[in-house]
Each structure stands twice: as C-alpha cells, then as structure tokens.
Amino acid sequence: MIRRRSTPWIHKWSRPLIAAIAGFGALTTGYLTIEKITGGSAACVAQAGVKGCNDVLSSPWATVLGQPLALFGFLAYTSMVIFALAPLVLKSGQNNSSKQLENWTWWLLLVGAIAMSVFSGYLMYLLAFQIKAICLYCIGSALFSLSLLVLTIIGRTWEDVGQIFFTAIIVGMVTLIGTLGVYAGVNQTGGTAGTSGQPEKITFVPQAQPNPEFGWEVTTTSGEAEIALARHLVKIGAKEYSAYWCPHCHEQKLLFGKEAEQIIDNIKVECAADSPKGKPELCKAAKVEGFPTWIINGKSYSGVQNLEELAKVSGYTGSSNFKYFK
Image 1 (cartoon, rainbow, N blue to C red):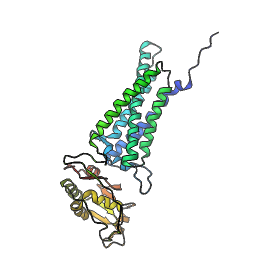
Image 2 (image 1 turned 180 degrees about the vertical axis):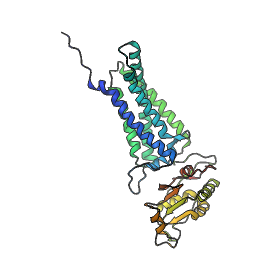
Image 3 (image 1 turned 30 degrees about the vertical axis):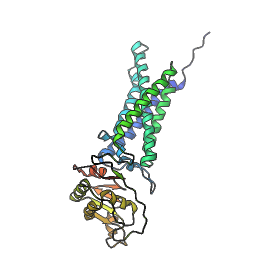
Image 4 (image 1 turned 60 degrees about the horizontal axis):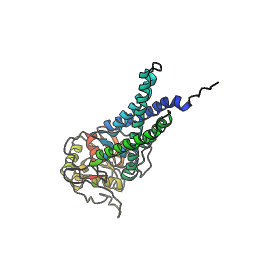
C-alpha cells in the first residue's frame, strides 16, 4: 500500500501568513502616508538627543517623485495581499486556470518580496548612516519585507531552485539600480540638489557659552527662498518656541540664515526664564515640551524642521531652492 505524502503545514498556511504580514505592512505604511500628507507627527517613542520617526518623515528621502515614500510602500504591501489571497478567493477546483493562477501569483510574490527586501535594505542603510535616526516603523517594515521573502521561498515546493537564485539576482540588480536612480538627486548630506549648487548640511556643536539675549551668533546667510519662507511664516501667524541655550534651536536658526532669522524673530517665543526676552508662561500655556517647537495652523511640530517640511505644512508655494539641510 502506497502512503500518500502529507502536505507540510507551512505550505497550507503560507499564503494566509503572507497576506497577514503584508496587511500589517499596509497598515503601517498607510498610517505614515496619512501623517506625511497631513503634516502630522507620527506616534513614535524617541530618546532625547536621538532622531526619530518624524525626522525620517521630514528627510529628503521620504519623498519620491513628489509623493510620500510610504505611499509606494502601501501600494506594494497591498499588491502582496492581493497576490497571496487571489488563488484562495478565486479557487474553483483543480482545473488548469486555477493552477496557472496559483503558479503566476507565486512568481509575483517572489519578485515583489525580493524587490521590497532589497529596497528596504537600502533604506536601512540610509537610516543608519545618512539620516542617523531610530524609526521603529521603518525597521518594522524592513522585517515585514524580509519575512515575506522567507515565507515565499519556503511556502511552496519550487521545482527549479536555480531559477529562484537567477530571479533574485536580476530583480535585485534592477531594484538597486532603480533605487539609486530615484535618489540620484539627493546628495550625501541629506539635501535635494538645487539649481544653484549642492545644499549644505547643517551641524552645530557648541564651542562657547550662549548669550542669554540671543544664544549663539548665526553664521549662515539666507537666500531668497529662506527669506520668502520666513515672511510667509510671519504672515500666517506661525510661532516658534525655543530657548537660547538649546543647540537644536540654533541649528534651526542656521537653516534659515542670518537675514531670514531676523524675520523669524517676530514670531519667536523665548522660553528660558533667565533670558531678558524670556516668556516661559507663554510656553507653558502652549504646552511646549521640547525645543524648538513650531505651531503652524494649529498643529505642533517638535524638533528641528528642514525648511522643505516647514514650507509644506505651512502651505508655502514660493521658491524652494533652500541652501541648507539638517
């Protein structure tokens, strides 16, 4: 008597597991897409002095072809859910069309998982070495992508293992080349290339004690875009809450430059009680917990903000050829 070989449990549950993981990925990236579009702040636990999720969302790499990067992640995860569930939903027996659909969707899952894993790997490189931030959503998405790849490989019996490696090499190379091409306009300091040259990355390490009246001297100069944005922020009634002793607040000044910063002074609230300009009661009333904090159109934005992000959340539509980036 010939005993029929039982189907491994992973082969039975691989598609539902893939769909579930991709579903979590779609929820995560969908949430980040909404936060990016609306200019909100992603809920993320961050340690003092360490960049977090909102720094990643405001970085130049968070936008691709004018759209939030998270939107493309949402579309990718949603596609994986469809590829995983389509044969289960449309299955109508063991006919040729059903088998063909199952086979094609497995290959689509493989190609998608490889591309997503390679792209996520590149994003992890950016997170660690360029943005230098800790973003749990980003790390989680990378783990989701890797899990999808593992489940796709072990979730069925592949007749030609060599073809898997060949596919991985081709898809991986195409994905990496495409990724580098998409980000070709973003320089290694984190700024988007402008028509007048490469933007300069801003960093500040205090070398002297700050002056209680103005902090440290602003050594950068403003361009037309910085001045126009500063005037726009004043016009719409934005507020910046800061403290003279705060290095991050000084970095925000450096992003604007000396001339634009003089305009920003009109909407700035000094929170340090020992400063001649200090108005800590206003900061307390605004529930400011960290510096700098921007309040624009009724929404609060904590931490140093790149000028591109301030332009977006404030509705600024003028020149965006900013000279500096954080």
